[in-house]
Length: 165
Image 1 (cartoon, rainbow, N blue to C red):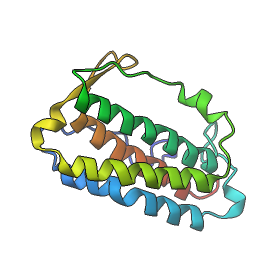
Image 2: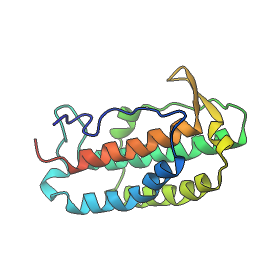
Image 3: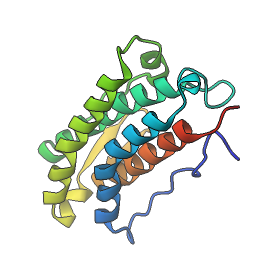
């Protein structure tokens, strides 16, 4: 099993994608994460899921950080004309103390509780709104962001569910 990308790499589907399917994955992610965390053996929670990888606890905290940034970036793209977003060093953020993982799970639930209803109200043309991502050296559409973060959540969920090394 490929431990770094257990569900494969992200593949953007620019035209044929049914956005409601990606939004549903975002909607169900908080509960799926809670279930995975509850089923993760205590002894594995602070062990890396792969050689050189983060611990499962750090993965949950990373999802909270990352999806919070997703929410802000979507709102910026909806309210400004191609705003430039601020990249962040996810590896540096991962080294910071984040408190109990339960708070990160609550944050993920709250962020998704806000972003999912917002996305459900958008008309198709709204998904074409964009922001400039300096780290990627290009603009990114909300359509791509929604697909990427649906994958991102599932990708890291699979890390939490991996068996011990």
